[in-house]
Length: 592
Image 1 (tube, rainbow, N blue to C red):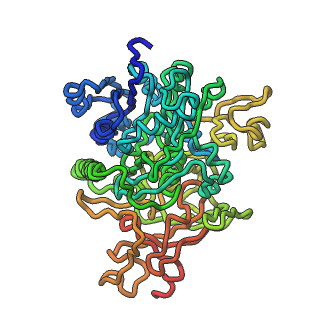
Image 2 (cartoon, rainbow, N blue to C red):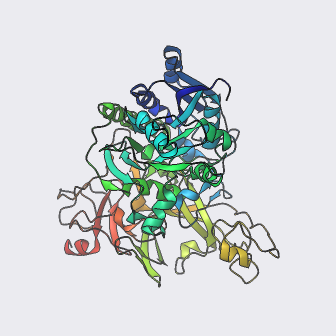
C-alpha cells in the first residue's frame, strides 16, 4: 500500500469511549515490546478524544491516533450507547419502549451479529490497517495483556509456518496466523485461566456442542491474537460487522477459502504471551444494540473456560497497571451510582454485572410469586430432562425497568396467576450483560408469532411456524410460499416481574459489593440467629430455581453458603442478591 515500509510491524487497536480506562494499558503493551521497528495505530470512535492518546501521539512519533466523533443515540434520549461518555445508568430514567426486543440463537454464542449502524469493530479495524505503514499487522485489543517478546515470537512463528523455506523471513504475500495458547484474566481480581485452543474444551458441551468440535470452530474467533501480512488484508478486508465477544473468524475463513496460508501458531514458550481481559463493568449494551443472552454466555465462557493457572511471570509489573484500571472502573461505577441515587433514590442493579436496572420507586407493593415449568439442564451431569420440571420464583413487580430489555417471542403466562390475567410474557434480560432477570408483561391479544428463534414473522393460522423452511432450517430460510407477514408490534403499557435474587439494591456509593469468591458467606449474627428467612445482614431471602438452561440461573453459579454444597439443576434455593448469599431447602428446613 501507499507509504508501506517493509519490515515495519503495525500494531492496530480499535477502541471507544467506554474503553478509555484501558488506553494506558494499550500503550504500555506496545511500549514494552522488544521487536523493532514498530508503530501503534489507534482508531477511536466516541464523543470526546482520548487525552491520553493525544499526548502520546505528540510525544511518541510511533503513535498514530485518529479520533472519529460519533453520536448514534436517538434525539433527546438519555439512554446512552457504549460510544457515549455520559452516565449509562440513566437508562433507568427512560420510558419503556414496548417494541424494543432482542433475540438469541441456540448453539454457538459467538455467532450472534449485533445490528449496528455506523462504526462496527470490523470497520474500525479496516480503517486502522488502511492507515498503517507496516507490512505486518498485529492486533492489540484494549483490556488485553501482551508480554514484551510477543511480537517478535509471533512474527518468527508466522514466518516459519508460512515461509518454511526461508526461516525468519517476514512474509510479503498473503499469510495470517492466530496464537493457539493464551490466558483469560479477570481484570477485577487478576484471576488467570490457561486456554489451549488445540485441546478439547468440556465447557462447550453446555452449549450443545462436542468438546473437540466446539474448540475447532472457535480457534480463529479471537482477533486479539491475530498476526497477518498487509497483503492478506488487501486481499480480504474485515467484514463490516459487530459481533458478540471477539468473533473475527470470517476474516480468517475467507482468506483460507482463497488459498492464503492461515495457521495456528505455537509461540513455543513455557508461559503464553497474551491474555484476554474481561470485566463486567466493561460489558455495556446500548439503546441501539442492547445485550442479549449471547452476551451473558460469552462472558460466562470466558470466566470458566480453560484451566486454573497461577499468575504468570511474563507480564511483569504490568499487573499493577491492571489493578489500577480495575480501581478506575470501580470508581466510575460508584460515580454513576452516586449521581443517580442523589437525584432519584435507591436503585435495583443486576446482581451479575451491577448495572442499573430500575429505580426502587418503580416497584409495585410486595413480592409476587411465579410458578412455571421448564426443561432442566444439569451443568454437572451434562443432561437435559425430557419432561418439564416445576420451578418457583419470587419476583419484584416494576412499572418501569429501563435497564432491562425484552427478549424473544411472547408466550402465555403460566396458569394460576390472577395478577397476570390478560397479558403475554417475554423473557427480560439485563440491558448491559444479557443475564436473564425475569419476565416482561404486555397486553395480550396479538396473533401468534413464529416459534423459530429470531424470526420476526407471524405464524400461519393454527401453526407454530411461519413456514416449513423456517421450522427446519431457521429464520433465514423461508419457503417460497411463506406469507412473510410481520408479527404485530407489542403494545404498552408494559410491566416487569424481575426475580428478586437476580437484583441487588444499591442505596449509596461506597457500599460493600460482593465479589466472586470460594469462601462461604454464612455466619451467625444477631439478625439471622436461628432464622431461615434472612441473610446474615438481615435482608429477606427470596425463592428461585436453578436450571433454566438459557443463560439465566445456570446451576454452577450457586452454592449453599450454609452447607457449602453446589447447586444442581431444578434445585430451589433461597437467596439474597444484595449479599450474594444462598441457602438450600435442606438447610432452610434445619434452621426452623
